[in-house]
Length: 144
Image 1 (cartoon, rainbow, N blue to C red):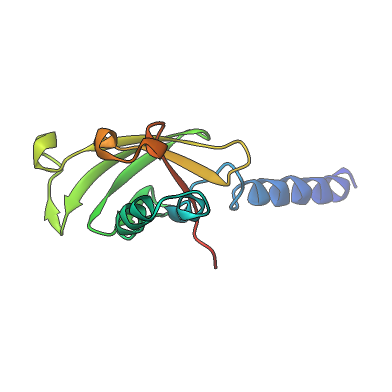
Image 2 (cartoon, rainbow, N blue to C red):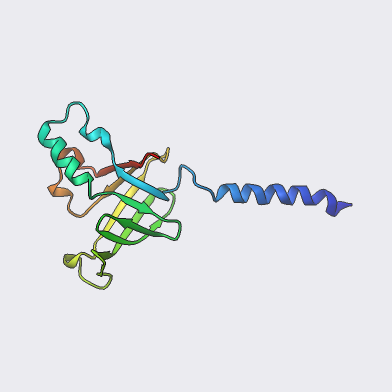
């Protein structure tokens, strides 16, 4: 009799555990693109052109197996709920996992907003980006 009463409770805990593993606001899994609002009203034509060009190659898909794929790079990542650390392992299909940073084996960090809607990445080349990205490159989830 006690086992019969415990079964629904055990099922409830299992259901809650499964729901907790699904995609949530504290998760980076999925496709991310440069925030399109950066090219909106107030941006000069030069800023828009530079950002549109940059955005065409600066997008990432984070997979559940802790790997990511970008336009010309791919690698692995760790994520603790807020902070992201990305390590490049391939550039244009070539293994750079054991190469020095100058050869493309770069690491990048980032933070996910508390609502899970914005991911700020800090690439090592931030000094060549427009001033609007001095604090990092804002990404949003790709629509659709």
